[in-house]
Length: 176
Image (cartoon, rainbow, N blue to C red; front, side, top):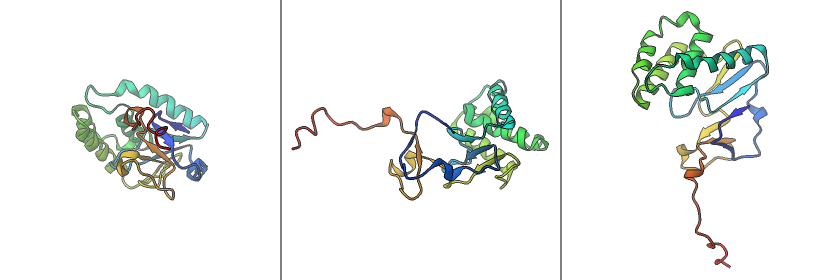
């Protein structure tokens, strides 16, 4: 399991095993708020395929355009298309044009939606799967104003120290 530093477990009654499907070497999830395949967390089975996939994805940084490219979040969409549906490269010309001219999150999200339209509704590939919105193991914390559901949530993304509320020193010692 890979997780970004700003992801934390909020519900210890859920287990990561609930989200593992041993038929797949790599499992990604859809972010709830966009067409984006999340890169903040993914599940990896230690196989030749997944090691090569991740190594080649790391080297894919040389293909990032000189634009607002979205780093790994933008790159994974092009890489998934190139790896899983290489016959669709020609179709992706419009998407890549958007990505190369991108100047904002709006452009980036348009590019990601364009790539996802080419991938279609397919979520399960031979060795890779993308878990549907609202069914993954991580959810963005801001969507529900830092509240979480004991029935659905397991981990939350966006738990940054800079966003944490603090109490004045001694507040609780005075409340006896």
